[in-house]
Length: 200
Ligand SMILES: [Fe+2]
Image 1 (cartoon, rainbow, N blue to C red):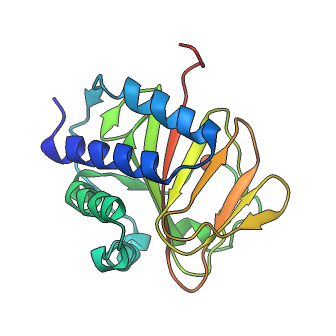
Image 2 (cartoon, rainbow, N blue to C red):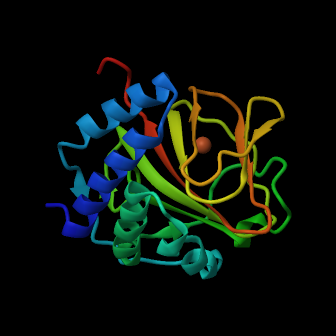
């Protein structure tokens, strides 16, 4: 059984992603993802754990920052869920990342491998990046839709940077190279990946 805080978060995430995503490929992905989440996975009993970069969490998740009702609801649901999440550093290569990247970011898987709800078909999680830090270039087979809740720049493909802004979204097709970097404010963004075959 999902906890009330996880169920509330997933409902708020569904509404916020569906409201904000514009790319039809992202919308199709979000629909697949939340249909699959009608069935719960295995619930983890691992205790929550933070990383040094979580010192920016209060600033990044200040509800006052979010005027849009669905984003505000999402951030409040996230704040209620956060104590049960395990924050981790990203594993894998660090191409083009800031030298102090390891200590200056943290990711939490909410549903997905190693997440609060363990499953392989859907990954939903969040990244928190300290100010003035570049995340490594990376790619992965699952398609990915970002919902951005802060300032910060995002790269897709070779060197094309955009600034989605609060409530902005980004769809990464399978395998595309991508990265992100914060400016003066911490970067905070949710991501939703469809990791099962299409049509499955
Ligand atoms: Fe990614």
